[in-house]
Picture 1 (cartoon, one colour):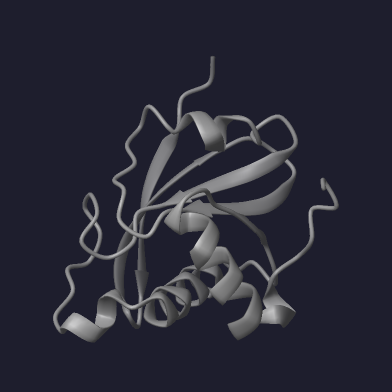
Picture 2 (cartoon, rainbow, N blue to C red):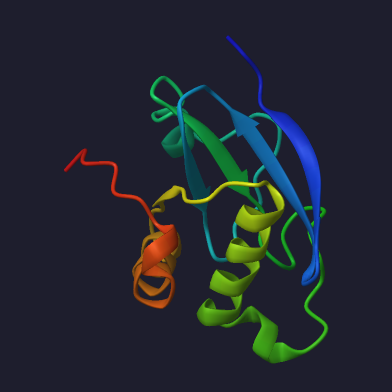
Length: 123
């Protein structure tokens, strides 16, 4: 089984730890506070057969940027971080999947940045 590769993505908003695996259209998977590592994530693994999955550690998770101010942990701030990561990766758009608070984050992301979120059509 292919393992998850890791990159540190440097953005104007900070540096973020991102794991990636799979081939196909880009799909971001994240959680508001969980830490991901090179073993991946059961939920994210489900998508790697159809998508290139980017598993993102947000602020205060893993080796990603610390929050320098409390407001940086808000969902909208996390969306801005995800957008900075997407831009730095050179992706014009990507789909988003999340569970638990990651699912809530996906709703905020879809409302805040609709031109940059693609539908997977898998529902």
